Length: 406
Image (cartoon, rainbow, N blue to C red):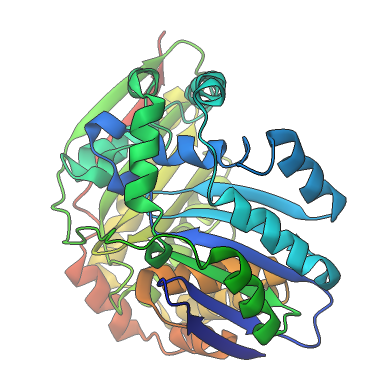
């Protein structure tokens, strides 16, 4: 595999991991914009705009966009996070140019007011759908508590009130401020001829405007509190807890991922053996979340209401044991084997590599080979784990609990 990179005159970066032995390819436009780039009056606009990119362009209707993506047999979609909006498609190499033509056209959507009002109802239904399924808004609430007034506290979807208040003019203005050519990266992976890839982009993207679209990436101060949500339709009790963790730029991120695997992976972890395998809980785990400038650990628990207090004591015991005693060599070796295997298995799929390459470039502006990624985990020592726990105490947490209304 060969990594190549160039930048067009307007600032659009083009990167690709080219694999001549692959049978397929994946491409995507990665935009450095998400919910953390919104203010309170624009809450939810990044995700809303992602939807609008599929509603038509000056040269294609919404039906054209979806029909043409189907005609080339692509697996196409998009997603919005706190920091990124990504439009992606996997396809056979012979359809690459047509795929880039469609995706690049989508990056300059019409944003018509009629489509805006229609799609607004879709967004409102999506918010309601997620509010009516587990864990019933607990994730959004823990982010509010942990990040306080920081923009990372805002949910990606927005709220019913914020989305209802959005106007087409606000979205058009947001697009003009965030979708700069210099704030986007065209990413490719799999069977790609890089020179031809660049020519395809030059023919379609050179007229895009470029302007400053920077963001504040100072570490967000953590806030610690407790909150309870009553939900009529909940039968189980749900608990999400948050504590500070390493950012996307900090070297401790490798140790943090290993630590989360040891404590709360869905198989073979301490939480798995003490809570899941024992039948005490339906769901329990821990995961790190990394952003530019800041990060956090989230732990999860779902169980019968009458068992929740006892299970929380078990969770607290696991956390305190790691905080005071660290982890064992055996646990470290098992986690290393698991995560390195996962890295290699993911690397065999162009779409998975597209996510890894694009996210790495947006957050750290670096390219990592599969070997370099695996080595990052192989080099984590017990001392690294101990230093990470010391720097980011796991027992200083906020808690959100969702309980049945009865």
